[in-house]
Structure formats: C-alpha cells, structure tokens
Image (tube, rainbow, N blue to C red; front, side, top):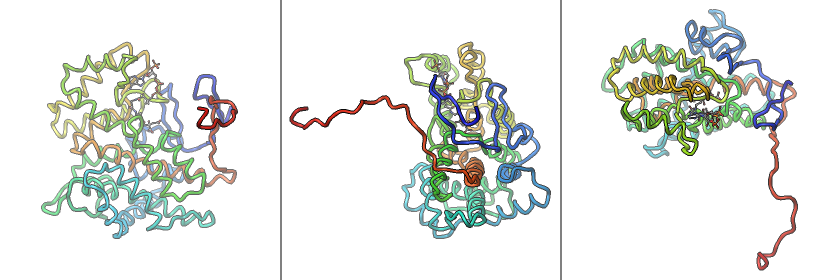
Amino acid sequence: QAGVFTYDPGFTSTASCDSTITFIDGDKGELLHRGYPIDQLAEKSHYLEVCYLLLYGALPTAQELENFENMVTRHTMIHEQMHNFFRGFRRDAHPMATMVGVVGAMSAFYHDSTDPSDARQREIASHRLIAKMPTIAAMAYKYSIGQPFVYPRNDLDYASNFLHMCFAVPAEEYVVDPILSRAMDRIFTLHADHEQNASTSTVRLASSSGANPFACIAAGIACLWGPAHGGANQACLEMLKEIGSVDRIPEFIARAKDKNDPFRLMGFGHRVYKNFDPRAKVMKQSADEVLDLLGVEDNPVLQVAKELEAAALADPYFAEKKLFPNVDFYSGIILEAMGFPTSMFTPIFAVSRTVGWISQWKEQLGDPQMKIGRPRQLYLGDTARDYTDIENR
Ligand code: SDX
C-alpha cells in the first residue's frame, strides 16, 4: 500500500515520503538513480554528472553538463569571513563537528532561501552548497592537522580539487594521480544518494518545517556521523586496527556472533540490502586498483581487511544472517590507502551525500501537498494518574 511500511514486527506507520529519485531492491541488491543502475553510473559516468541526474531527473546534454560543471567550479570558494569560523574550534575537534557548525552557520553568510516564493534563489543556494562542501571538508582537515588552508582551483575537476585541497602544501607542488582522482570520484558517486536512509530522512523532516537548506543539511551531517550509519567507515578502520593481525580475526568473528556481546562487524550488514550492497561490488574493484597503484598490499590493516572479508563471507552464520560487506567496508580501505585519517572518512561521505540530501529536500519542497513531518508513536507508558505530593512519595 503506497505510503505505508512496517518497521517493527506488527507495528505499521505511514511513511511521509513518495519519491522518484532513488530505488533500492534489497533482495536483488539493486540500486537505481532516476532509473539508471549504480554499476553503470559508476563505470560510465562521474560524480557531477550524477549530481545533475539526481537534481534534474535526466542525464544532461553536453551543454547542460558544461554549464552545471562551470557553476560548480565557480562556486567552490567560501566567504573569506568563514575562515575565522574554523579557528573557533579546537585543533583536535572531529571534522564532522566542524562541518556541522560551519554548514549550519552558512545561512548567516549566504541567501537562506526560506522564502518559498523565490524558488530560484533557493535552488541556487542549495546547488552552490554542492560546490562548497569539498572546500569545507578540506579546510576542516587542514585545520585539524595545523596546515594552511589550500584554496580550490578552477583548472581541476571536482575530485582532483578535493584531493589537492587536502594534500597540497605551499612548500611544494602536489600533482593529483589520475587513478586516485578516479577512485575519489567513484567514492563520491557511490555515496551520492540512497533513498530514505537515516540522514536523508533527517533532512526531509527538518526541511518539512521550512528550515533553510543549510540548517537542514547540517542536521543530515549530524545524523550521518553515527557509527551505525555514515560513521561506519571510520568505525570499520578502527575495528581493523584493533584486530591488528590476521591471527586475531577468529576472535572478532566469534564476538560478532555472540548475542551477549554488543560488538558488531563494522562495514558489514545493511538495513535494506539482504544479499549484497551493489555499491560494495564496485568499491571493491576500486580498492584493488588503488592498493595496486600504491603498492600497499603489505599494509597490515589492509591485509586484515582482506582476510576478514574472506573469513566472514565463508562463514555460514553471516550468510544465514545475510551479512555482507557494505559500501563502508571498502571505502574505508581506499581512504586509508590514500592517506586520509579515519576522522576524514565520514566528512567525505557527507561531501558526497550532500547532492542526495539536496535532491530530496528539493523534491519535498516541490510537493504542494507537503506538510510538516510528524511521526507518531506507540505509547507504552503509564496511564493517567494523579500527582503525589513529595511527603507522600
Ligand atoms: C550505511 O540506510 C542506508 O541506506 C545507509 C547507507 C547509506 O548509503 O545511507 O547504506 C550507509 O549506513 C551502511 C551501513 C553502515 N553501518 C555499518 O556497517 C555498521 C555495522 N552494521 C550494523 O550496525 C547493521 O548491520 C546495520 C545497522 C547496518 C543494520 O542493522 P540491523 O537493521 O539491526 O540489521 P538486521 O536487523 O538486518 O540484523 C539482522 C541480524 C541481527 O541479529 P539477530 O537479532 O537476528 O540475532 O544480524 C545481526 C543483528 O544483530 N547483525 C550483525 C551485524 N549487522 C546485523 N551482527 C554482527 N555484525 C554486524 N555488522
């Protein structure tokens, strides 16, 4: 029945969301963006073209793509006044904390487009955020390592620009390796949108009250941060480092199976995919390419990852529970190999998912029937009772 779903055994609630953007079939391991399979987009397209597809519902003509890419390229800088904003954080602040704060404050610097009548202004403000997110994430990283901010460059593509802003230093030229840039673009493409996941639902709920796009995206960033969601790629690498060597893998596999142990294999399992995450298949191919390029097969963390994947996939328990490596298992491996600290894994996820959040935010605001979200509850508390004075308690 349209708009109704069951998320607890026997308990149903009305979904507030119909959408035409992304379709997932968890049993088939199918993910479509506006009807196009994710493996075809990952192979034949690139992130900014997928952004256009998500935002406008169709693949762009050559001219439309050129115009869109020019818009993004020319809006990658942030207001110079915002540089001071970063300096209010401690150096060891998690970059996600910085991103929540900086993005949430952007309505103080840019048109906050809450006025529904100026849809064009609203659209421009939200699309420019796609251009600025890599700059904000890179600045959060540079600030955390005490290096100077690196300005975006208009001669670099989206992924190369991000890598350059993260890894370049004034003292020497940094040339972006095209294989790393392709792998970075593929990570952006594979994380762009994913139907009504927790952070997208957060953005939809926030935007249903009429909050400005920057505040809504900041809410999505906050939700994505959690280790059960976007924070899983960071949690996965930290788990691999805790395992430390391949001979400790059986110990952690046993813990993941122990119902009395809250430990879960980070980077495994999914709320919807019950066979395999189609993004993980493509991401695994990218991981192999990057590891070969960087010659890091002997990196102990990455060796543990490979052995853990093989052990889990061979274990009947995980097959029975339908626990397969998800997109975050492999993205973490690639980002580790690229030299990012684990604290930057989820900010990179947030950069990518911004277009998904904005596409869904626009779709919801474009619905003339839209009402403020108001999830209902199943009340299990006390029935009505009279107040008891403190001397009688
Ligand atoms: C993302 O929603 C999205 O689309 C999210 C996302 C996106 O693009 O937006 O795809 C991104 O968040 C991917 C997921 C990243 N999270 C992780 O990798 C964290 C580790 N995974 C788990 O925490 C877990 O798998 C979830 C949260 C992802 C899903 O958990 P559920 O909904 O509880 O899974 P389930 O109910 O299908 O679990 C079935 C069984 C349960 O055991 P029983 O109660 O049946 O005995 O499998 C067990 C779970 O306890 N289980 C795991 C496990 N995941 C589920 N056991 C060990 N390790 C795991 N990772």
